[in-house]
Amino acid sequence: MKLRDVPRGLLQRAARVSVAWEGREIDRRALRAVPSWGVSLLLHALAVLILAILIRIGGAVQEDRAFTAELPPPGELGDFTSLVEADRSGDPFTDLDDPNPPSLSFGPADPDVKFASQPRIPELAAFAADPGGPAAAVGAASSLLAPIALNGLAANVQAPFSGRSGLDRAELVRREGGTVQSEKAVEAGLEWIVRHQAGDGSWILNVHEICQSCPPGGTTVSQTGATGLALLPLLGAGYIHTAKSRHQSAVRRGLEWLAANQGADGDLHVGGTGISHMYSHAIAAMALCEAYGLSRDPKLREPAIRAVRFIVDSQDSAGGGWRYQPGQAGDTSVFGWNLFALRSANLAGLSVSKRAIRGCSDYLNSTAVDRKRVLYSYQPGRPASPVMTAEALVGRQILGWPREHPSLVKGVGQVFKDLQRSEDRNVYYWYYATQLLHNMKDQAWERWNPHVREALIGTQVRDDGCPDGSWDPALPSRDRWGATAGRLFQTSLSILTLEVYYRYLPLYRTADEEGMDVDPGAAGR
Image (cartoon, rainbow, N blue to C red; front, side, top):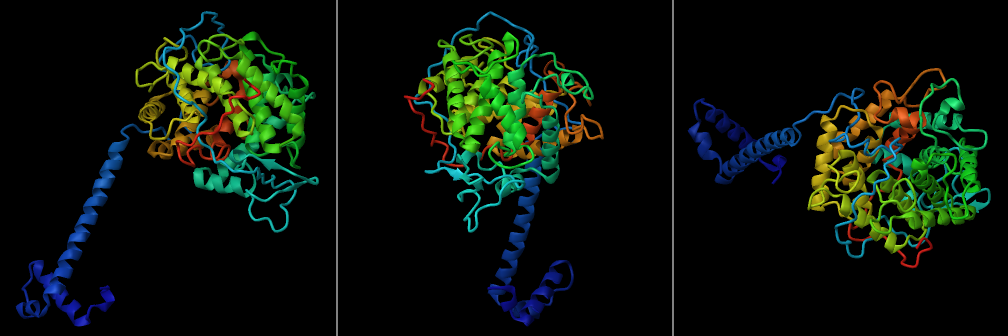
């Protein structure tokens, strides 16, 4: 029965009864006039109201108890630090060249290891071109399924890349936690990157050599790594060389430089020191694979396949990892970039050998510092590091660990606790931790996302000079590796972190146990 169906006289009598219960004189005749079911209705309504109030209070208390540590206010959030100072462990461009190999893998290989689930679509899904490019075909059913005319050709893209442009990008920004301001920061950062492209189409880490208006910085020399770092955020925002846009030429020239400088064995490393070799190759290989996955340009297919084959051939045959030089026993920092490159190849539709993927699982097992494989180290036998734990757990996610895996849940909790109490600025940690928490989509992500987003927006350089749109590695505080890696590295990883909402479709969008198929007869075997 609804309230409006109760007779008016009955409501008036019930009101008098209620007033009497508060200490006033009871009208006994009115009380006797109220039917028994009316009294029952009032008592049940009162009980439901009290229960609702108790639940609400209890929920608020529970929420307050869930997180005892508070993050700094937006804009004041620092970056992050390792639990230990382990010989610059986790530095993506370290100056330390340690030839001592780590111990070999001690954990058994996980059975039938394969990549974690991404949406499987039988046919290629069409890519929604950048708003500056051609319009969609008339009568298109949706931006995910309808072909887009690009100079008379149909530009198709694998489903996991389909959220990077057009209406799909806008929808994912809204749904996943981005803002108009975060997207403006992305576009301003990309403008800065494009302004600092060298005449031959490449980029270098110390942009001062190209632009004297930007302060010098970045002692590492890696032309290949810098070019890959510049291309990845451009591709992450959906800018491809086959679709008309304001950055089309920059992307095309960068990809042409990579392809032109690739060795016959697939190696992309050019213009860098030995310790940057496998870092640089992996980052550039990611760019080639993602450009191919976005554009389906047949000219990129063979360079991408050769780059993947070089990664597989360079994997440590005993431990399953990668380090500075091909075949060297691995470290988790270099390992992460190479695993990500294999993942990008897989998402682009290129085959990756099952043996290489199993080797990746072996390596992660060897760097786990506890029996439950919750925390991870820079190299086997070293102490746990939050930075390396974040990177390793993202690797676990893309290798197939489901969201509810107990070790993953515990590891994510440890990373989040460290993020709350850390004081160092470390965009490398920020980049991996944001991906890790975004994939989980739990309460930690809801807390972390607005802080990392607003901190990046608030620290972006905004002035009338050439550095406008970049991130300064020394201001407002010094980044842990900024002096070594430089402004381009700082800016690229900051943009990639802000692109987390749409760069890949949600990792756990489909059933967690459904992994991507891996061809044992892959070209990279």
